[in-house]
Image (cartoon, rainbow, N blue to C red; front, side, top):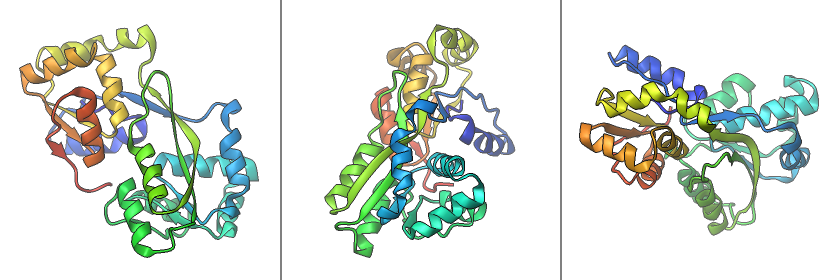
Length: 262
């Protein structure tokens, strides 16, 4: 069972199919654009992009959100890219997300930590020196719809503050439940039955928020945890931060953890 939003689910599903598995896609969250009336903070930050020393992307969604918004503000993809170049700030991204900056937008990646996590990025900025007093812009998700914000971004901001950086977070896109409302619960009846009958071998999380979303769709934390225990369902996560967050949400260990962010 894959709980990733559509932006991530396709590639993982294809890899699982190639390995002989049968993926069941049940997105615990959805990633969407900000509503038109909620671009104020992001637009204000983008208009003064030249005032920042670093633009720190914590996910590929942030990259697409920022570049897409700049395209709307500047009139074309080319103008958006040139605006970023003219700002002369350094670009930070995690793992393969940096390839997107270079391949799709032709932008130079300046900082990519060996440990592809937000805490890895903090450590890399500290290791390089010059972090104290540096102005860092962090485009992050606005988590809403009843979901609690996972600790990743708050810990990232705290880490930047700890090393002396002046960090600014701005909402760049929305993270909301994958199947909201009563209609969503009814739409997932077949997947709940599969889990309760022991026909799901594993559940894979790509973010902590997905664990929250899946818990709701499966009838609550205790119902989900009971099914996992009864049937020996294997829990897996994309990276140690997601594993720790999902474990906290579900009250269960997450033994399978990926080591590379791709």
